[in-house]
Each structure stands twice: as structure tokens, then as C-alpha cells.
Image: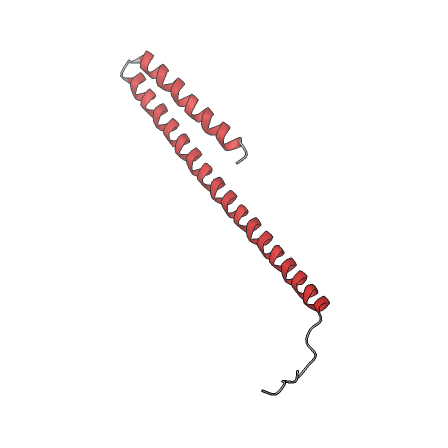
Length: 102
């Protein structure tokens, strides 16, 4: 079998090493970007879920206050008082959660 001739000069080892370094750097940058994007998406999702939980807690607190008012109208003052205290605690917890960093 006759020797094949190169149509162009084969790359030198230094050129190959440089190409490998460049591709490794590009891969590293792509991985870093993907990590940051994933991290941002997880933080956004956590923030959204926290907001939803706080809204639900505040709705529950409002419902408990309404129940307390009904108890008060039915002359159940002590139960109304305990219900108001519980509603205030739920609302306070929701406020603390809302202010807390994710």
C-alpha cells in the first residue's frame, strides 16, 4: 500500500493542546452558566412557593377571625378570644415567613 500524503500539514502538538484548552474553557463556561441558570430557577420557584404558602396562611387567619366574630355574636367570648389569638399567631407566622430570605 503506498504512503498517503497529507493534504495539509497535521496539527502540531502545541496547537492540539491549545485547542483542547480552549474547548475545556468553553465547556467550563457552559457548565457554569447552566449551574447559575438552574440555581436562579430553583430560587424563583422557592420564592413563588413561599409566597403561595404565606397567602394561604393569611387566608386561614382571616377565616379564623371570621369564625371568632361569629362565636362572639353567639356569646362565646372565651372561644372567640382564643380564636382571635390563634388567628393572630398564624398571621404573625406568615409575616415572619414572608420576610425571611429563601
